[in-house]
Image 1 (tube, rainbow, N blue to C red):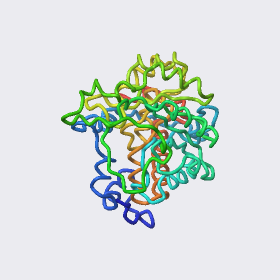
Image 2: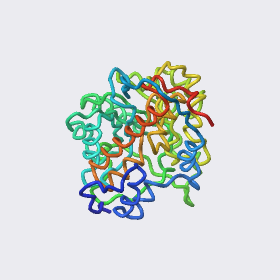
Image 3: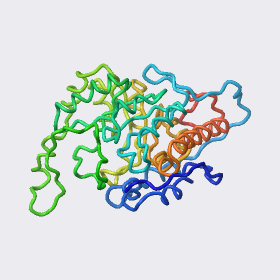
Length: 362
């Protein structure tokens, strides 16, 4: 399942992030392609994430002063050049032999924070050694709580600047998986005690009776995690105002509106559909990020207009990684930022703070 040869240069016909898909498909086997591009159930939520952006129309404005325009923002004490982050995705070496090292190098070159998956194929310390890397660490609260707790100081010592707690996949065995080649796996989880998987096959107990469900994290674990670190903690998987309010009450520092790319529960709203009511109740008390379906710079603009402070991209950069390695990932980030800037010019927004909801209409 090793990745096929990547592009040695970026073909001129790649003009948008979506153009990488056909090149990536040629360099991936069936299993890796299905895992990266698929969704839970019939894939309705995964499709809706992207299609819902198409229902949001933009308002053009004329003759605005753009002489001091920029895309900078402040996030957890750092000034970012743009509001584009890389979402956590496992097993980058399935798509490129350099794996997360290539992704981190591209992210650093373009000033994009990268959220490193706890299921990365490289040690978190080795990823952090990439020059200029701005990294956050994605964390699942595992059934082995001691192991989970030990990951936190590792990330802190390596220089990671925030924790992203993924809570929307409470039973990992229900997630669509992929058979990994020998020698390829989540090296940062080596030594973790695991529970027997539950796949709902005959002869196994009902899911509600399984040890996995009994060990799934609860809000009490959020309080426990908050006591382990001074790093900012963002809760990933928020899709309702109630959960947003509860996360803030629990002391979390940021929210990520996410439905796990449509990989867990089919039939949910798109993240861009869930965003406005969440942003209303949060009322700028903590930063809100969004992932799911972001394909173009105009989609980033729409998300910011409806209440997000920044977005995370996932499948878009992974397809570019499969097709062209680090240069591809860097190119996708560049394209998205350029498209965002073009959208801001056309709508008369010189800064991100000027992007408001009245510029988007359904």
